Image (cartoon, rainbow, N blue to C red):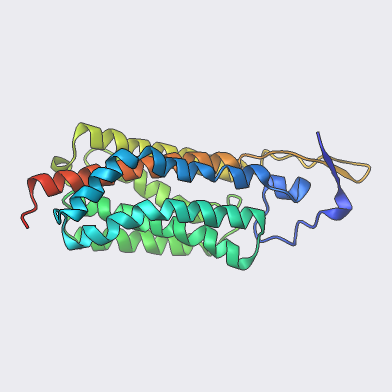
Length: 250
């Protein structure tokens, strides 16, 4: 295993410490694993092509016509922003890492509860509560290894996936929708667990001023979050297409 001199590693020089960053100042696996977000879009290309056809035919309401393309582009922005941050951490690349993730979550949750028959009052209440909870979590960035910010999103996904919740009208969801939604909740929650465990599982064994290079679990956050993105895109697009086929009249 490659070893680095402890004197060459400044753990305070970076915004967020990850296991690889602490043990080698290099995060190759965290950079490369962002390719999973590109793969997520590639996997969804068949249903994306159907969505594009519906958009060109004018079969989708104006609001959906604007937001649906966004949830396709944002995973690619997540891949680029996160790769830049792990390759060259700075305040700018940190924002490029966080903002696309936040917007993807915002767009997909808003689209889902709208397509699931939620009335405007419940949409407003749900979104406001989620945003406030996320803003509060952001006040303690170091808790759960800088993962507390994402906990309200995981909780919301779990609540939405529970049968009989008061937010969505289950009559608008098929068995396949339920399965995809549950998959989103499970994969994102698992991703968050691995993100939070990264530093806990990282053993900084120092002997003779040398730190052994290690690989943490942050790369699993990337892989599982990408899987969550793929499931989310499948869910939202199939619900939008069903809406255009059965209820939208141009």
